[in-house]
Amino acid sequence: MLKLTATQRELIESVRRVTAKEVAPIAREMDESGQFPSRLISIFGEMGLMQGLIPEEYGGPGLDLTTLCLLSEEVAKVSLDCSTLVGLNTMAALPILHIGTEAQKDRWLRLFALGKTPTAVAVTEPHAGSDVAAIRSSAMRDGDDYVINGQKCYITMGSIAHYVMLFAKTGDVARRGVDNISAFVVDTKTPGFRLGRDERCMGIRATPHSELYFEDMRVPVENRIGEEGKGFIAAMAAFDRNRPIIAASAVGVARGAFEVALAYAKERRAFGRTIGEFQAIQHMLADMVMQIEAASALLYQCTVVSG
Ligand SMILES: Cc1cc2nc3c(=O)[nH]c(=O)nc-3n(C[C@H](O)[C@H](O)[C@H](O)COP(=O)(O)OP(=O)(O)OC[C@H]3O[C@@H](n4cnc5c(N)ncnc54)[C@H](O)[C@@H]3O)c2cc1C
Image (tube, rainbow, N blue to C red; front, side, top):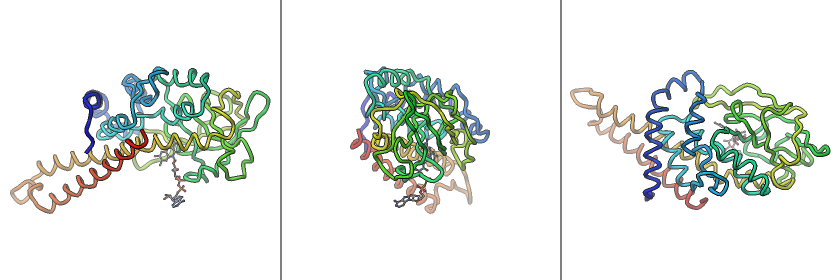
């Protein structure tokens, strides 16, 4: 089992307090109404959670991945919608950190570190999910700009984001390849950026998962992160540190469900006793704990390796 540091325990405690006050009372209403209250973005930004992995040298909290996962877990116990805010800027910030120039780091990371800027990452397209090399969005160089055309889908917070980290082909669009994809920071106010519909999801319903369209959208060359053709590698490196945060929210929501089930088993009575006194129910609860702890062990082994 993970041995927590004193700082991690304090951070968990303070996130638990804020979540109990600000999120728990509205978690159900958010999910049922499908509305994401924008004030939560400020609250999570002020706590440093949205921008958790941005290093201190760029004004961020400089949390390590294990700590951010512990905090994601804590929020997800109460609301999966809000856990999407934990590390939200990770996929926008990490490519800049990995391959961006010093000027780009100074410009974007310092902005994201303020915790006031929701961002999104746009990789997936209707025909290309796991197979990132098959994306067809194109970015064609024209003087000091790129002209971007394409369609993205399932983009978390896409309709709320101020900036999108967009991945598009700068070479032959039809060729599957890892060396012809580049990354761009796109201001969502840029002409040619258009929102499609938000997906109708089975859960996490307050968090928008949006379709985005890019129609002859001109983006200046200085918004291309790093060199042309390095986007695929930067995306994969960013996923390595982003996916564990999503796994942590899955562990968190399972822990939250277990706590509710345990409380109910102790309260609900049948045949003259609480249902938790029946061995069949005890087996179910024991199985839940076993699976949660197995998932947690795998997750934190992974975060320790990924840093
Ligand atoms: C809640 C949610 C939020 C998301 N947020 C974002 C976001 O913010 N930005 C973004 O760009 N994308 C986002 N996505 C998209 C997500 O990244 C894709 O759904 C994911 O990459 C899988 O792609 P796909 O859904 O097209 O499935 P596919 O890639 O078509 O896969 C279909 C099935 O085939 C399996 N499969 C695929 N390849 C292989 C293989 N080589 N071997 C064996 N099995 C395989 C998969 O495991 C899966 O079961 C989000 C998705 C969800 C559900």
